[in-house]
Image 1 (tube, rainbow, N blue to C red):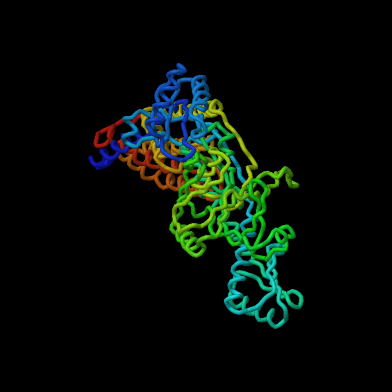
Image 2 (image 1 turned 90 degrees about the horizontal axis):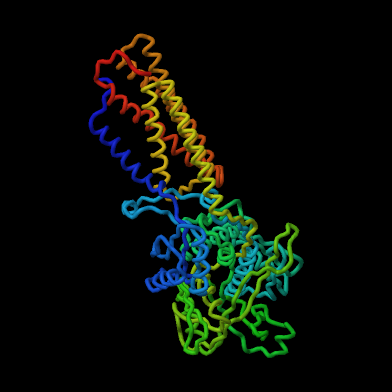
Length: 615
């Protein structure tokens, strides 16, 4: 029978519409002005802190919509910005240094919808407000670290293979120089190095010297690895703070773009993201006298570092362990109320520490605090030149073997201990970073953008509906219904996709998708008109109209889809947002036009003797 769908297909279409409507509904409820109470230790919120927040707001007579634990953090919702700002000011004073009260925007979705896992679309900074950072990663220290690793490896390898040498020195351009006492040893070492290592270049220099350096590919890999590791660490730091829906992604070769929607405290964000603190554990050398220390006439495997009170200490250059192996760090106080950080190592770090302490009982081990800071000078591009600050914060005698758990003391204050524990827990930046661009977009501007975007979207939708109804009458109403269903489908899919974020260009993509949907309806209706004019019966004209228009609709939408895929692959940021919504809208428009309008037309006209078709 012409123009007839089986019952199961109609039921499937109705269920699809119901489910889509359910997951699109959360976007109608908007967002509440809120305060997000964040634990700087990265711990989940507890009932005692929740009770404290409620009590403080009641005492200050600050009205709130609700105060509850949501996603492991405390969220206090307010009806106006005055109450929100007042609450933040009060909570900062009461909660102290352990917590941060951050301005935020929280979805106002009712509980019955959240039980189904329904949530609104994630909004970009241009719609929601928040903080944007563009961070530049200095990858040179990664290659310098590689240079130092090569020195340590060569020192051991040459010794194990009985190849005698005079010294190994660091040179410019990441080169290392190995000095020999005769040409024979130099040539023997050069041949051995070439045969053993394929990621370093080996060149004879003078009569008794060999210069080696990591190849350009090996240097590029080190830089690449540094950027990727920093991306993961920055993402971990943001997650430790409980910030919802952050975006951390690579931008070019050595830049990272970070978006923190809803967050307005730029000082806190810079403090957490820009910090580069880490720890190094090294063995102390007590065999040298002060004259040797101050003359700087040190063996090549030793160097001098200073304590916080300016005392010089001789350390071995070889690092026992770094912050990379720390998986948990909690600040506390010892029996004498002095700040300390309790550290938990991963399996590799614990095993390394166990073997080292087992073989060095009775010796001194220093904890070296390493941080990159603004040196007060700027490079030719006007950016601050970072300097490496190193300070010994603790020296302890190894009294017994220990593994995964130990404590670091000698920290100046409890606030420093809290910040250090947060940074160590979230991860240590492998190379220094600089914030080269920062923007704060207020929630008021974001709400204005939403209003403008919605006006543009609904204006286009209403204009299209009016055109279809006036020009195609009842068939135009069917097309208008398909347009509305198409919009619901796009919103539902965008709400369900975990990585999708709606921006202003994304709204433009939705409007374009609706226009494409109108175009497809026009093709079908015009084809049906042609069939009726050629003398076909109504049922046959409808059937032929859909059948003949189908290839043109598929071709047109496929070309659009291919274009959006290319835009997504080659574009960044807003272009990707435009490509995502356009591609989703293109697919849903094909479904609503080809299947949706056909289903409605079949229900109204299928299997009936009709002499007049309203089109």
